Image 1 (cartoon, rainbow, N blue to C red):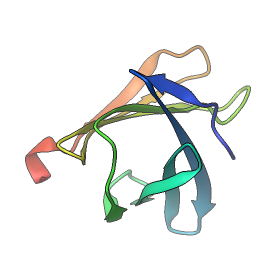
Image 2 (image 1 turned 135 degrees about the vertical axis):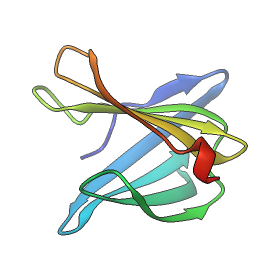
Image 3 (image 1 turned 180 degrees about the horizontal axis):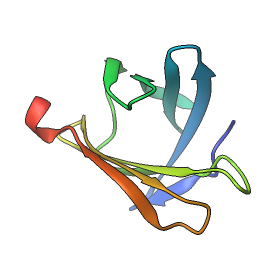
Image 4 (image 1 turned 180 degrees about the vertical axis):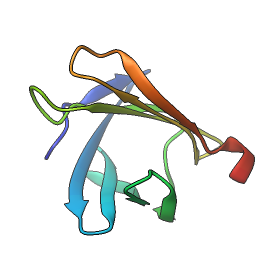
Length: 100
């Protein structure tokens, strides 16, 4: 599912997500230019991270009735993932900063 474009300072980061048998894959683009790809398992552990991820925040809004995700990047690495319910309330937060 393609996410809505998200404004971050002067950048628009587009996130595309795909469900996989082992989890989910997220690709990040700026003005149609590929930036990075993150593959996660069903527990949201990072299986692989490729490319140069952007500093800042990228949000995934896969559609009505779906859980939204917010990726926070610091130092071009995934720092935090927030998962929200349909109303946008954060129901889970996973910290990756200590693993970078």
